[in-house]
Amino acid sequence: MRGEETYSYQDIPPILPPTHLPSCPTDCLPPIKGFLETSFVDWPGKLCAMIFVGGCNFRCPFCHNHPLVLTPKEMDSISFAEIQTRLTTRRKWLDGVCISGGEPTISPGLPAMIARLKAEGWAIKLDTNGSRPEVLAGLLKEGLLDMVAMDVKAPLVQKKYEACTGCQVELDKIRQSIELLKNSKIDHQFRITVLPRLHSEDDIRAWVEQLAGENSRLKIQNFNPRTTMDSLYEKESGFAPEIFSRLADMAATG
Image (tube, rainbow, N blue to C red):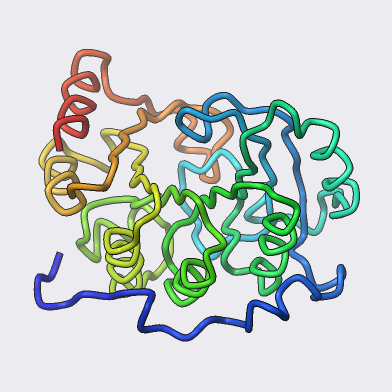
């Protein structure tokens, strides 16, 4: 992390005035391609529903949600009205709603959708790759987020990062998003999925050192070979249990 640069969402104007956000027409909302009524694992300590938004600006070769990334238009859409109805029937036991993808922040209607959910009393968690700090800043400034999980794919080294994302990346934008979360007062977590083909133990150690902070939680996830963006990765394995345990401890101790 470059020590001379700091970013605060307080210094960035909102994307839209808060009074306008909820009134956005339904057809401007993000394309909802999946809905999970109950998740016990996606929001630490909370029971949440999951909304999956189509489209992504990364091409991570190990991604298991690649239909959402590559062919979202071929997937059936779920109307926001249906989501609202299904959430209402579960209000008594759900703690909040997690919006994931794909990459939600590339959808122009994301702030409007979150604002509508917030207006109905839902706590909101956002999963993001951090590539659009201006969107994250606007959401934070408007008080629309209660928790953010940011996937930081590798230590902040250009070549390593682009090997993990499968595309060119503006690392300064990733750095901005990291600083926005570190300087915010909301609960947040930095996550990484690791596999030996892309990450060395030194890489993961550097990742921990770059992201550790007093109020930041870190999570290391071991790669689980499934259907992947690049079929070659279906033959890859994650770290051996004893090595992964050591890596996870590294993140836990910061």
